[in-house]
Image 1 (cartoon, protein in one colour):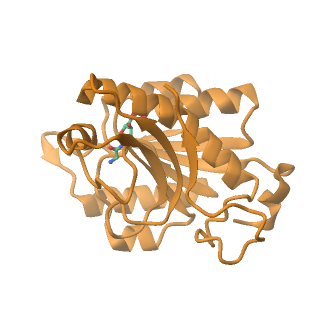
Image 2 (cartoon, protein in one colour):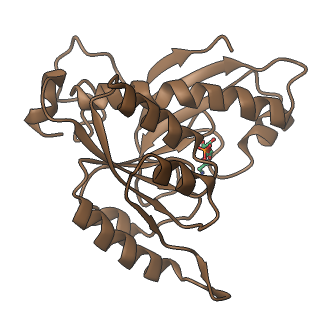
Length: 229
Ligand code: GAR
């Protein structure tokens, strides 16, 4: 995080967002940016799916979009080809922060290590538990009492980077995987802008995610948001 983002009174944080699907989290960022309540500029969106509704959302907001479809003319684009194009695009946009918001391809260590900016991922569970997919179903099957979502730094190991923030909720006996998905998404829509505000204001320092080099008046990570939804 550069000094220019400390104290929240400087240039907006330039954000690139990677998506694969509906893009409801992208929409929250677009709305917050347009309302002037988050000091961000979404400089571009990359989708690996042409039919992702997130692409429509970005276009409607006049945000540059790169569709790097994983299937073109019936041929699957390999992850290396995707990464070469995505890397070039990100270098052009020069983001301060890259956000994976519902991006469903696993990225290589080489790509992650050579990013032009820190990269964070939104994950639908309370990491380090339940990495990977089908998290809502898995927490129910395991009889968990709590669930939620996490924002963490992306590292080469899947869903294993430092956890920055989490939104927690209590699982009700009547909850299903579908109801949990709805409740967790509500949490994501609060957690994502809240976390980006903390990053933009220099309160969460992505270069020192374990808080070992920041003043002691800042709380230890992960910061937790308790949800009543
Ligand atoms: C979100 O719930 C996010 O946590 C999940 O995809 C959804 C995207 O929703 N991400 C992952 O599962 C990543 N492994 P959206 O497209 O409406 O923002």
